[in-house]
Amino acid sequence: MSRLERIFVAGHRGMVGSAIARKLHERGDTAVIARTRSELDLADQAQVRDFFANEKIDRVYLAAAHVGGILANNTYPAEFIYQNIMIQTNIIHEAWRGGVEKLLFLGSSCIYPRLAPQPLTEDSLLTGVLEQTNEPYAIAKIAGIKLCESYNRQYGTDYRSVMPTNLYGIGDNYDAERSHVIPGLLRRFHEAKQNAAPEVVIWGTGKPMREFLYVDDMAEACLHVMDLSADTYQRNTQPMLSHINVGTGEDLTIRELATIIAEVIGYRGQIAFDSTKPDGAPRKVMDVSRLRNLGWRARTGLREGLALAYADFLASTRR
Ligand code: GFB
Image (cartoon, rainbow, N blue to C red):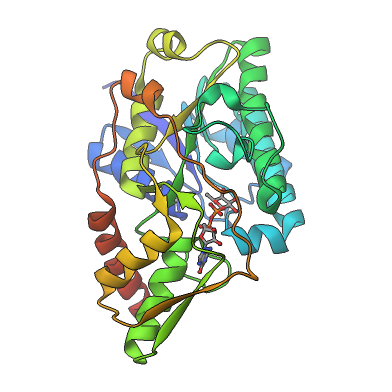
């Protein structure tokens, strides 16, 4: 019997990593390798080196990252740049040393300039100034893309990068302060409904526009991109442009999002805005034509995804 491919999912306890691991388990034709933080500290180069030297890994999904919403990014910039640069550099370098030929690095739409033309195309990378609230995180993610490109150029590896739009879904972080807008608002509207509060306060002006992708769709996109042949992938990217956008291609205002979340939860009070909190980028909708040309498109509609996310939030309060 031939040996099963050994796939390392870095970050398998995070929202995206756990969704990727679920999909790989469902397929059942590979051996999924995962380590908790206490078993393997990804910020520790020696530990990561030993891991790749011993485990004979064939492919890596690099979904481990230090993530958070706009306020967390703005408040703890050192954590965001340090943790992410350490984790991704250790994994990419030691994967290469350990002979891993294929790796998929997960980035973010915040790599693109704050005022780049919309929808955001892959080639707008490094054409302008970044959004201030998450510049350190974005710089780390840009470095990750450039690590992959550089190892491909110099060492002939096949390391690819996917840039997701804002993600949400099962396994999200529902912390009131550190979370992204969807998990943050699910909690706030839920608590307001429970307490019969007359209004819910949303951060910022409500005018920024965002695109949202359900995490299971993201995981499917990751497997799809990883599995493309090198020929197909390179034909649709360029040697100097190794990253590819993942999203729905559709966005809405934060005000509209809040209204839908209120409906999903069944909250009937008022929605107010706290403009002392940052808005962040005015808009960041993805051009997803490259990924569509490669045969993938998102399946989960926003209302459907929000209902699933709300069910997960309710389950998380019981965990
Ligand atoms: O989701 P979020 O933190 O991500 O915020 P970003 C999106 C928008 O929602 C911002 C507003 O305009 C926020 O001001 N917002 C309203 C809220 N109420 C809330 C709330 O209760 N919580 C949160 N978090 N936002 C992040 C980056 O930016 O996007 C990360 O900081 C990452 O680095 C992520 O790239 C995808 O889209 O503004």
